[in-house]
Amino acid sequence: MTRPHVLVGHWGVTGVTAAQGLALLAPVGVALLQGGALKAMMLIAAVVVVLIWELLFALLRNRRVSFHGLTVAVIVAVLSPALLPLWQLAIALSLGLVLGELVFGGRGFGFVAPATVTLSVLVVSFPQAGLAPVSAQIALATVPGALFLLYLGLMSWRVVVGVMLALLALQGLSLDPIAVATALSFGLVFLACDPVAAASTNPGRWLYGALTGLLIALFSAGNGAITTEALVFAALLSSIFAPLIDHLVVLADAARRRRRFG
Image (cartoon, rainbow, N blue to C red; front, top):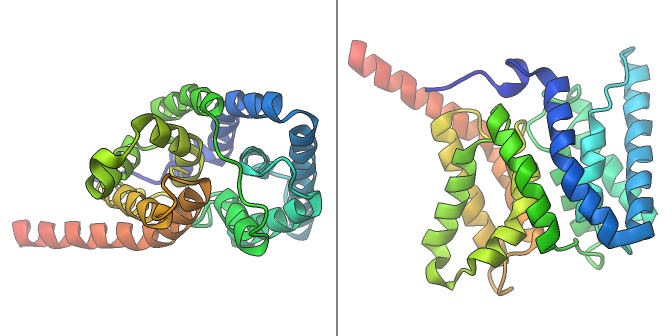
């Protein structure tokens, strides 16, 4: 019914980071073309902040610099508004990376995606800034990376289907499929389906996806469309409940086995 968590399985932490980095190349390239010099400066600033914290924690723990936070920098840069002051980006990214990943020991030891934490901090602390909507071009550029991660087993199709089924059940025919696919594409792939944050049991992935879809619909209520902010907060809350969902699935499976063989 279950399989080992992907980060302790065949790929390892470095393999997961490398795969995510490759999957991010196309969407970040499109974001840079659309955002120009401002987006490029934002990406450079995000990378510098991440490297500073990675180096600091490596020195404190007497380890090599991991560079796993680079994918966090890219995701945050894509979803941050081009006019966001760089000091606000630095504060949010510092809190998100440290509290979401580094204090737990690095990639694979926490239970939330640091990019999701960063974007949540950005919205809560600097609400006037907001988050950048995902354009149709970025959405299309995300597709090859999503297929790549699905092929490698680093992204669960069950989560994606669970999200869509929940949205269909709650909003039905009022959904514009193209608008929904555009709004969800990047965040769904790199936030909600993050292998650290998502549930790791197959039944749990269905439940996790359904919970994410429910929360997206709840947070988008009254806006007339799915927003990036709604997806970010849905991904954050779902990831907090993901360990509990997996635990309940394991308990249910153990109880079923006892009834069958006991």
